[in-house]
Amino acid sequence: MWFKLLILVIAGVALYRFFGGKVPFLDKEIKESKEEHEFGKIEATSSCTVCGTYVTEEDALIYKKRTYCSTECLEKVK
Image (cartoon, rainbow, N blue to C red; front, side, top):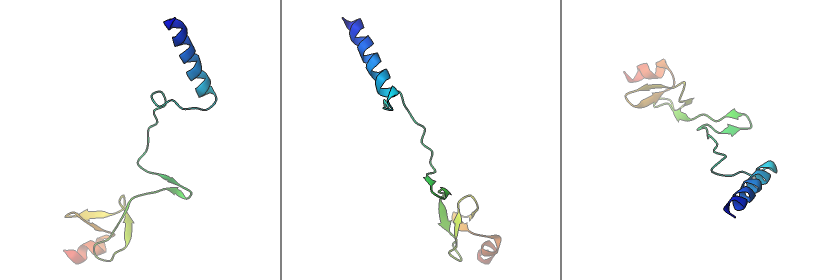
């Protein structure tokens, strides 16, 4: 009896997945931290301490826990 029930559950899950259903413990998706937008990937930005220009965190210069957009703004602080 348990064997028949197990076969029935497996067949049910297979049919459910075949028609597009997702099973949470079988379909673990890896979520990326960057979201997709219609223009591309969304990147985190921060503003320059001196001039206020927004710069992506990849391009920003960080000095003493403050963000700067260029070496010119960084030299104004020193």
